Each structure stands twice: as C-alpha cells, then as structure tokens.
Length: 228
Image (cartoon, rainbow, N blue to C red):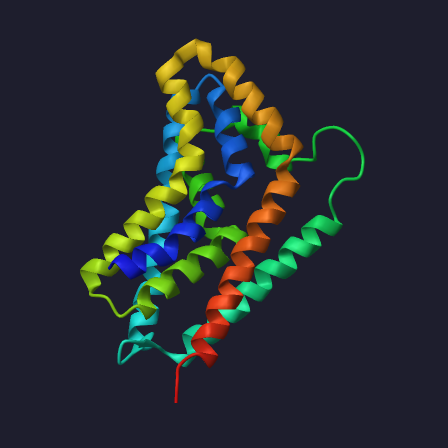
C-alpha cells in the first residue's frame, strides 16, 4: 500500500494546484450563495475524482494491471501515452499563451458564477475534476499506478482516497479561508484570485510538463526495466 500511495503523491499535487478550480471557488465565495456554492463545488470535486479513479481501478484490475507483482506491459504503454499527451498539452498551452500584459483570459462560464445554485456548483465540481482533460489524464495515470502495484483492494481504496484528499486541498483552501476568516477573507481571496489569474498558464504548463515527464519515465521503466 505504501508503494501505491507514494506513486500518486506527485500526481495529486498536479491536480490540487490547478488554477482554474481555485479561481472558480474564490469567485463563488464572493456571491450571495458563496458558502453553499463553495461547499457544493468541493463536494462535487471529490465525487468526480472518486468516481473516475474507481472506474479506472476496476478496469485496470480486471485487465490485469499487475502480473506476478510486476506491472503488466499495457500499463507501461498507458503511462507512456498519458505522459506524452500531457507534455504535448503543456507545449501547446505555452505556445498559445497571451503575449500582452494583464490577467489572462478566463473561461466564459466564470462570468455566470453569480447565478450558480448549489446543484449547479456540484455539477461544475464534477466536471472540472473528472471531465476536464488535464485532470482526467492525471487521474487515469494515478489509478493505473495504484493498480499496477498489485496491492489488495483495501490498499488500493486507501491509496485512491489519499489521492482524492490531496487533490482537493487546492480548491478547499479558499473555502477554508472563507469559513475561518469570514468577511476578513475578502482581501486575501482577491489577492489569491489575481495572482492565480495572472500566472494561470505558467502554473499549468509547469505542472503538465513535470507530471508528463514523470509518467513517460515510469512508462519507459515499466516497458524496458522488467528484466529477462
């Protein structure tokens, strides 16, 4: 189980530090339904990651991700493909980054956050955690890494839970600040939103590149380091 948890730690950090979900929570907290919507979004985020990870674990287990305590060949291929996809995504996002000064453009749906209901906030939490291509690729990589260790079903569940909890820290931090500081949190959250928006692309590109290279390395090791 320890090996499975260790394998998902860097991947969880990559999901947790995604700027867009953090900015979304900050914007939600500034609306009249801020408390309810912020809590709903974080719950949806947790549900999305948990469901996506569980599905991949079940599929990986049924497909034999571990063969005699060694990773199956297909797992190495999956990691190699996922890692390459993340590296390509990092390069594409960097090449398309805004060249001018000021905040980078944020998704258009963020302008409608003041009209969100708790139910819609849950849905967006699920979408940004499990449907967002970047997070989905990382979650698939994390679940495959857990499955390939050959640990028991209980150990896999614990490792996935650790991944989900660590991946939730980023979006949960603004909510914790809001609940802990109340009205005094306004300036702190505004500063966090401004900084995240200004450096969105740089943060994402670094995360995608580092995690992508890690997955490529793991995939190569799995494919060519199996011994005779």
